[in-house]
Amino acid sequence: MAAPILAILNTDDEIWRILDSGNFNGAVLQKFSSISDLCVQWHEKDLPIVAIISQAEIMGSYGISIVAFLQKKGMPSVPFFIITTYINENMKTLSLNAGVTDVFVCPIQIKSLEIRINFCTDNWSLINSSFQRKVFKTYKIFSFKRVFDIVFAGAALLILSPILLLVILAVSIESKGPVFYYSLRVGTGYKIFKFFKFRSMYINADQRLKDLKHLNQYNMEASVNNLPIDESPVLCEWCLASGGKCRFPVYADNYHWCEKKYAILKKASANAAFIKIKDDPRVTKVGKFLRNTSIDELPQLVNVLIGDMSIVGNRPLPLYEAEKLTTDRYALRFMAPAGITGLWQVEKRGKGAMSEEERLMLDNDYAKNHSFFYDILLILKTIPALFQKESV
Image (tube, rainbow, N blue to C red; front, side, top):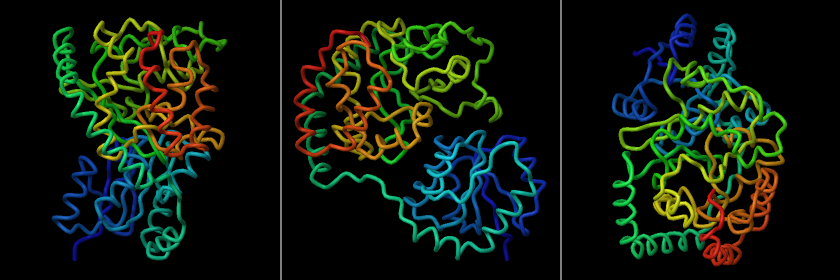
């Protein structure tokens, strides 16, 4: 009979060395290159996997989103553990509610892991039945709204197809790089998905962000804007901890960037959760037009068809923004549908500077008051808001 397997995901050499020194009731450690690779081998080879251990940020692509991915793939229920560099009580509660068995914070002690993992694997049938009795309610788009989203998005893509072709041609001619890109975003119920847009910046945009921090509209009231900037690291500390690879990538064909490179600046100057720069010099001329008319958002109609987003809702956030909004005061925004347009876009966008607090409160207001007819009203208000006065 084959030995039981502890499936290991995304670990760096140091964490692997620590895990390899442990005694897990005769289970052997086996690395997998990705969650998809694990699922394929698990299914095809009928592997005796008794637990999964992933080294990840809680809101990262190897964090709590894996639980939903495994359920979607119909994989057997086994204990799922996360090893992370940082966690607070809100994030821990979120993890446990999402189905994570336990979270360990670096530096880890192998004895603590052994005791907890061995206990869970030995008693999983009892623990799992307890988990299943606990229901974590998340927002689900009701049927009528979903039908409207599909019809609206499909019709819009068909009608706008000539404009989409012209945009593809214009972006390709003006500057080197891919036409489309995607980043990982956090939407309804903290679900992580690929968020599509037309490229509106030069391909080295992320490398210039550290030089533009003082222009962030959401930092205008901060008293620490003049602190020195650490320019030495190319990768942020989270990426360096993973062995030199980026954990928060933005992908576009053969290019990729790190969305969390600005984390070092954030730690030094207590940056706001959101970043929005007026007259951003990283934006191309075509990109400026696309942004001012919101044409750069049109690829998100594909996200709507897939079911990641709705036409109207709160904007899905990058991982580094969402991980800061897990308190009771702000988490409400994630219980509403994620959308292309929403309350803050039509109420404030292009009408002057808006504080981070104002935006978050508008998101919460929408979460509490949204309805189908309210969504129709916001769609009608979106049309004049597309042609805004400010370049943000």
